[in-house]
Length: 459
Ligand code: ATP
Ligand code: MG
Image (tube, rainbow, N blue to C red; front, side, top):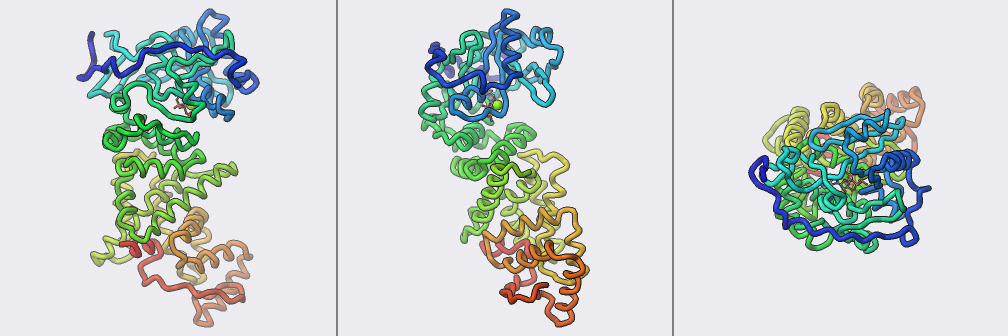
């Protein structure tokens, strides 16, 4: 057998598939819960004489009574044959060749059954145990066992509306267990991102990770550093912007994956004895989850500002301890953290700048001179930076007065705000609030710029 790369996949890593067919009256999946476009694709393939199945996350989610976010189809038709059946079809992917059938905004992904073995054609390539190319077509049985988790390897057949299970996934879904198919360590070596998928799917579905599936993760976590940085960015968004960020974070931390994905943040959290940075981070993630639940927009720049804030605080504290002036230290810390982070995770070019602006603006919430107040209010990143300041309250109430001032500043008309600021300045009270009600005075932060508050508290 010809194998591209050094290590062949051990065949014993995968179990023998045994078919269990669950008839329509023994499972809850109904055609009315399936996207009409996916049904069109399934019927069309079947009419043309091909096998056609709904597969993967969609079947799993339907069994759980959840709404799938996308519908994937598996078939024995090759990508070229699929293309001939659908006018609205394009073929994509090199590492994993797929057909996309496009219906306006909905894309139905159609994948040809794949085998987890090398036929010598060059369709499958493995380098150091990792799968870098996976285009050897196979049978449905072969396709089932090369998938990641048993719960993800179920097939809904359009010909008789049965669910076909080759690996015990149906029972695992009922028991809400995430179990890797085959030998876990081998499957993680083959594709380390599966470790993140385990944490993500457990967080998303509220599943437990089977002990044998969980056991190798802490030891193999460092392999993630070799995964493609762009793919890790995509996984980060799925982990943190899909409504289960807190659970994802806890899972990553528990399995030692955070140390590989965000080493500086992991280190800063550990050295922050008061736990203030962790509280702030978790509070921010909780807000993110609430926004997703309420269908409000969430931004990757804000997310990364949050996730890297502990690292930023730590870097800033170090630079300031070396005697660097505050503003320069802030800029340097922001650059240092960004540069180090883009090594494991590729942040697309448009995100670092707004992320850094959110950090740097944190030190501009204390001054109350009229000009500065209006300049900050007009800053394009003001709202994000203010929301960030609100999240920071979870770590320390020392900016409670700032939050109150800026909340008010956004609500009152400009001339009223200007007048109140003028009055405050004239009275020699630059921190006084625009309203006449008495407020708690802000505690002074020692002139280090608001941004480093919690970081220094914990060092
Ligand atoms: P989600 O609900 O987040 O989309 P999903 O299980 O559908 O979860 P996808 O990334 O959409 O995840 O993948 C679709 C299917 O492809 C999975 O259900 C699984 O069967 C298979 N799959 C995806 N990634 C891998 C992988 N790294 N290794 C093996 N199989 C995979
Ligand atoms: Mg999916």
